[in-house]
Image 1 (tube, rainbow, N blue to C red):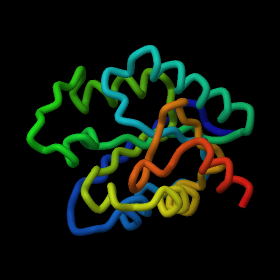
Image 2 (cartoon, one colour):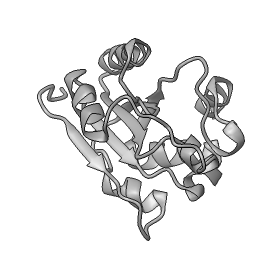
Image 3 (cartoon, one colour):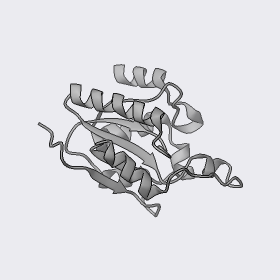
Image 4 (cartoon, rainbow, N blue to C red):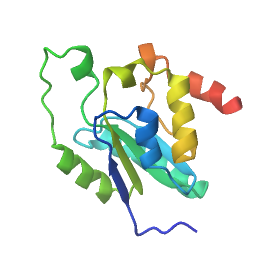
Length: 159
């Protein structure tokens, strides 16, 4: 049975390591249900998604986890635009911890991250975070050219 009292938080800083090496630092001993996003403000939509994550984790006896980023991806694609954040990184972490998520991994969003295929990214999550479920919102995309979506995840799940 999973210990419901602990939370593990990993802030993987930008540096010389690649994303795979960074995720290896946060490797999980337990199988996980994960979601992904910036989660700025942790608003009602985020809370609804996290509720689905928690339910999937509980139903399947998995550790609930969030993959978030150190900055909004738009800051990499259009660096001339300054995005206003609703919360600081520290406030966001606090809000996510209050929702009883057990694993929070903040990864640096870089050009290297942006160029990774959705398949590669999912494979890394499976390998290092032992992901068994991936809960996403209806408009969520990830990976190079936004190729990762619910249809791709269903296809990868069948493989």
